[in-house]
Length: 398
Image (spheres, rainbow, N blue to C red):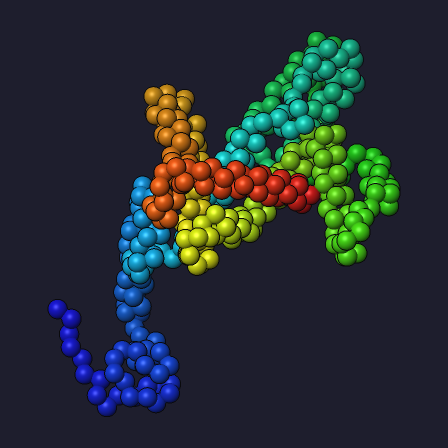
């Protein structure tokens, strides 16, 4: 039972008003001092964390499994138990894109850059060299390529280990070929890979700076109804995009991998702001299609926030299930198959959830709800496609 406390005779230390409870009714300051022993601070921290965790438990399951429930609760005034719509959408958006970025990096690390693997090791030139000098030259070239790949700083630990193994294998083959030619083995110190600085310098092909300078002078962007500052910014972005694509397609292995990673990071850096712009636009679509329901724009915005929070949560779960399935597939194929079915169920649940949300919130008949759902979805699909294309271009120009 909560202990009854009398505040008679106590005054607020900030404004001097007579206290009637733990918080001043004039300025809102608490009567409790912030100068407390450490164990009291620990107790308050634990209480705050548990309170937040309780709100998460009350918010995430209905968000995923009960279409329209959180929105109707918010409209009914029952809001304390749940996380606020914007905060919920914001956190899930950042978290889902972060995990999706990790998954893309994991896949991109295994894919070839510019049609060539990050570790392009070819020992045929060493094994077919006709002279000791040719063996040493071929070995030096392969070691330089390995060092260039290391210098990017983007190789995962497993590829770094493969690079070390590949280097030892190249040296063994070179020694064996030299022995066949009657020459002495190459000492380790005699054939050394280029240092990272040299490798990074070698990443840019000769004449690349000159080509960029010519391109910057010859291809400015000119849009008549835009100010000069905007045209200059678009011109700079266009040059960055050309540079990244040129390096990705025609650069060496290390430079191509670096350009690919730079573009991926740029795309994921622009996606969250793009989605934040689309959410109020989606609310405008709801307002237009339900103009005769006489609802405030803020109500439509709450629907949009909860709908996007659900989509971000679904994206997060689908990505996590995919990553876990990839990890379990070599060890337990059945678990990977189960997670694959779970991913498919989550993807199919997204349009069903959004349709049920629209039906339960706006309470129209099924024919009208289906028609408006199709129209809103069609409009939003093209808006989303356009926004994602812009985000892709801006990110690739990073």
